[in-house]
Image: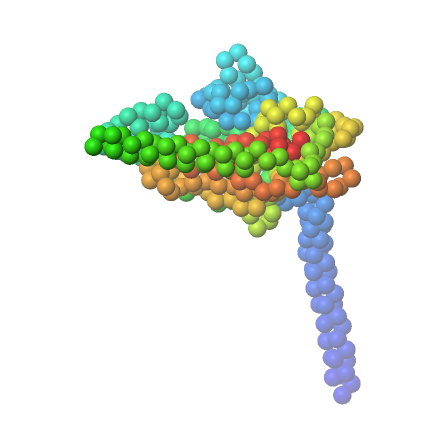
Amino acid sequence: MRTTSLGIMQDVSNLRRQIGRRSWCRRSTLLPLGVALLVAAVAEPTFSQTSPAPQNLPSHSISGVRSVIGLENVKPGVKGTITSMRAGLQFLSGKKNTEIPTSSIEDIFTGEESRQDVGGMKGTLVEAAIPYGGGRVVSLLSHRVDVLTVEYLDAQGGFHGAIFVLPAGRAAKFRDDLVAQGAKAFIHVEAPKPQDKQ
Amino acid sequence: MKTRIHAAILLVCALAVCGLAFMMATSLSAQAGPASPSEQPQKLTASSILVERIVPPQDLLIPEDTRVSMYENVIQELIKTKKFQHVYRSGDRLADNAPDLVTLRLIPEAYKPGSQKEREVITVAGATSIKVRLEFVTRDGKIPLEKEVDGKVRFYGENLRATYDLAKKVAAVVNKSF
């Protein structure tokens, strides 16, 4: 009887030790987890893709880019070369050079569109001149392009938005380069695309 | 016989001229009647205008390029109206001290994406359209003018041309009301 009570006591003490060890194990696993959660909560919002430290990457240029609208002192529709640099985004058209500083970039969007191969006023007249509805067949010829939209602030804090049309498949890389240089960009919900964007 | 034919022709001509004169008189009287001063909308006055950023409602998704193009085109068209000494952009610190500033809010209400290819090939299909509610807000938060405008591109041109059409209509509202 005594031996059994002693055995029970030993079992109980063993059980306590095991529970103690387990709780220590749990604490040791939970502590880093808690710290990680705290760090994640304090850190930048998860949607932000701003690179923590701007990297000194080589500049990346794309030629044949059309500035659609929104670039200060640049006429809408002008073609030029766009470059992502440490200082920011540069648009060079002829002798005119326009820059958007990296620190002033608020957000960058990329998209795809389809452009008619024969377009504009001249193209429309040519299409209209083709007999037997041939102009409509010409309208079927189109090519894909990328659209890059950059939202930025001027020196006074005024909001601007610049839209560029790039050759197909170039905008995403350019956006990533700008982000790597320190520009802000967020993850966005995709808006309905115009029907001819596929 | 000949005199009868001549008389008939003269009668027909006289009737046509009379009808034409009657139509012109009625249309002129409809145009010329000046509206009473109480009927005429009172013009608003402001030396400067601030265009707020376009933020669509959560249930309405508009492509970013369309939203940005709308904002930039509206600013360009407002500058062209020459109704204001300054056209400020959203967030511009200089607008804080501007006297009699009016703020323009553009609230998108509907957006229908179209297709340039469809427009050019089928003609009657593929139109892009945007509907926006304009709110002119004074410094004390009053809204003296509210209006709905829409921008469309029906036949030829890129999808973003709808934003240019919309901006032109915004400028027309400003020209009429300021």
